[in-house]
Length: 179
Image 1 (cartoon, rainbow, N blue to C red):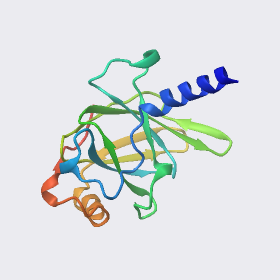
Image 2: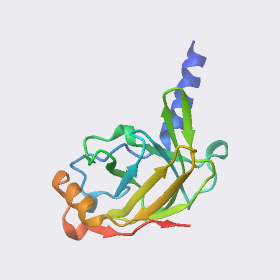
Image 3: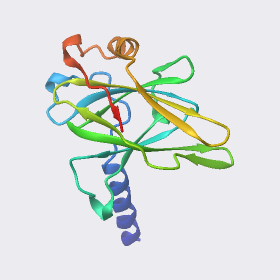
Image 4: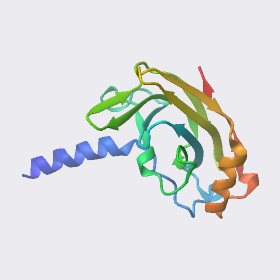
């Protein structure tokens, strides 16, 4: 029994250890955080729930050959606009990252990006970094198109109302680059 508990605990740690915190605490203060920075991204997507996979580009493959984490739009804490756009503030350590895959659970089947893609972004230290909006358009024949747009005025305005410890001077804009 102890061995089983140890195995389950180890697997849980490995699976959860690399993930970003799911939506940042509203009392987050970028100027007082040494290890993490706030990342502000929004998603305009067909599905309500999508897991967006990302990886740290400054690290090697990590444990068991994996260097992957994800954020899930299912964990949104109420920052939703117009039914499709979801503004997602989360924390990461400063560095260079890349979104490279998406998946979504659908009733009766599973939908995912057919091939990996590359949307690179950078998280700055002691700042809230606005990285832009990912627009995901899907079609009935399972094809998809991803665009990156700058929606800073709307997205940052919403976040500043919810995160009172962040001033305009603490927000840096580093829009993602789709390659």
